[in-house]
Length: 101
Ligand SMILES: [Zn+2]
Image 1: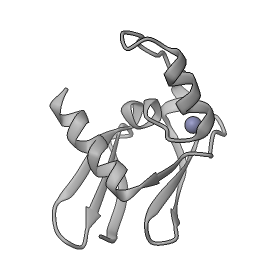
Image 2: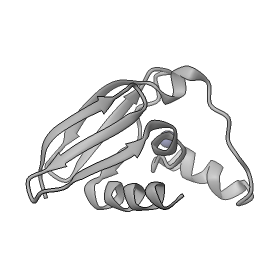
Image 3: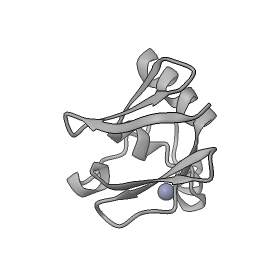
Image 4: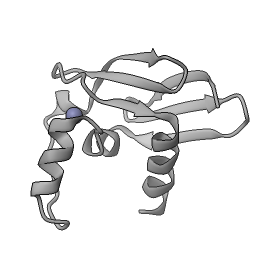
């Protein structure tokens, strides 16, 4: 599982093309909401399932995407948040959940 191309489409979707075929598409707001870093996970756990988070524009805009080893990508958001490391299987899971909504 190796990404061939990573891009942002229409400023609101992350699209990753993998070598094994198939594109993965995730809305940036959903991606931010599911940030796997420790502080975001902690925050999510303290919220009820019905809680709908509100984000400022800069929190759901991507400033930079970088590869982490060959198993994940890291995202720097426009508001400076950059501790979320998204492993590929997690991204696949998010893409599936996102499309199911
Ligand atoms: Zn986070």
